[in-house]
Image 1 (cartoon, rainbow, N blue to C red):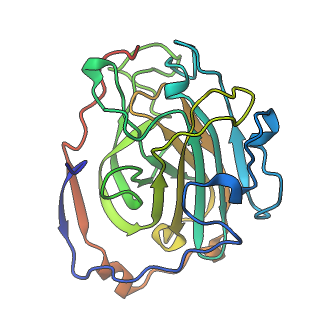
Image 2: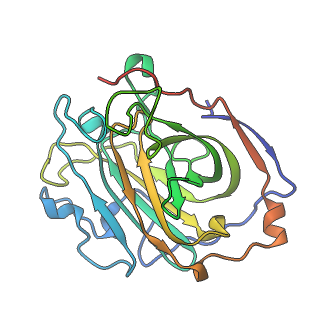
Length: 273
């Protein structure tokens, strides 16, 4: 079943995409081309070679366990976000995220189960999160100019408070305008022996997003990801030079229609186990 019901009103269909390449990065869910190893030690999370001069990353590996405190919520390894990596070249933004959350996790708040969220992009680092990237379903890799986000279960103090969630942690796209498509894969086969917690299972979200989708935006920006409960979240702040973003053109503006997202996801309710 589609993750959302959409109405696409466009004058033209986007028929071509820029070729995806950057050094040796391939969007296949294998993080070895990011310079990452699987030797069962802490250095596994640190790139062992330079793949880009502007590579940024953040690491927050936490052990699994039955129910441990993450940030801001709880959940153990199944809801752990462990590391986030990103860089740009002249044509694309490349992202790799490693998490303990399976892409097949049901989004069923009544059963204390919460599925994956979407990447949120915030230019200016002011909490506006203007863009979102779908991570699952038939539209994985689609990029939207956001008008409405869903949020998680925790308030700004880290208390369980789904009626007043922390707006610093958007979870899933609720409404927006489709501005383009990238390549994205969310692996569904877990791997182990990465980092000091050798028995923890990990999944990878890897993406290559054309910079053309960010037309009109440049400079410092944040990349954020969490699941629909927002039990754990990571935020990274790379830089996009103005020269890397193409100027808008009439053809490009006409090529994209408006995609209305309605009732795609219910607001999370209830506390995960």
